Image (cartoon, rainbow, N blue to C red):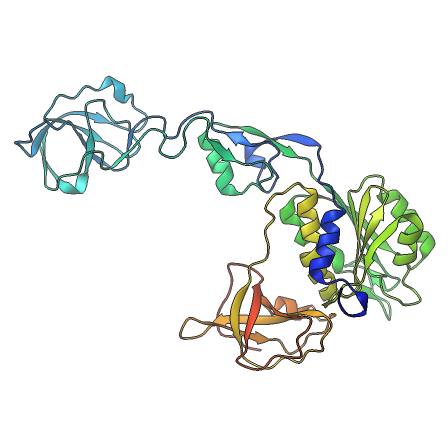
Length: 415
């Protein structure tokens, strides 16, 4: 356990995984709609790819005599991709003009690239000899009929869908989509577009959380904004658990006089843990409302954003039945300036990473790290990971860095 008996991020994830059972309901899904879905059944190849020996080059398929005395061949046929190569018969000393992907005629044992030939009327001269089997893709070279091609529990990506389509598969079985309810709490909140009165702010958390969930293809149930009232929360929670697999609320999980999420959760279900040793994001709650899992996020936007990334998304992956769940990429960089840190909580410091002239990564923390300053997320491209027991970091220290994306702007930082 971390300081004050708060769970570390790793221990919190262990509890979440232990308390979460993947969905088992299945759906049939067209392949062209299956990106991001979780495959329910391991798939095996119904055919070989390629289905026959094919040319990997534009050139000439050669029927070479046992003892080659000539480098010139009679061009007896032309074969395009999709043609029936079985209808072409070559005699020794003959060649067939052949295109990439076209089937190899039975008598040919190699393909010479067009660049290594000189064509004169109906005869072709070979200027550089290919070895036997060269420039030929053998039948089943990519996939052999019966091969396991995609394991169950795989989150399907575009390359998976291309592979399935190459096998002629049009429909697959996936796990059903999760139903995720989103609720923002707080008397001070108004929906974007409404007129603000003194002391009020716009609800940004629901939009951000929904956007983070979007790549996971869940059904979002927008519960809007709830007033700071245990009676109101009780009514909304009871209604939400009828349809939702997960209820995510933001705000109301701290210890203020208007924070009613915790007592409502205690009254209707149970709390597995409350507060974790990370910064930002300490007041995070996880529990159960009957068969519905509950995630109570902090109200500050950056805290809600970080805890969604670090705790909610792994929960969604587990519930969806994804095997070999991905973890954020972590790289090592050199710190450009000191970071002050009080031991007790692991910290996600918003930062900008870039490469120096030697190709090494350097990390610059942004000056503002308040959990209410969302611009430090939009201006950053990575988190610097500061360990809970760290007493601070100095300039030029090596640090672990978690990029926001594997693609991005890695140019020199400007504050």
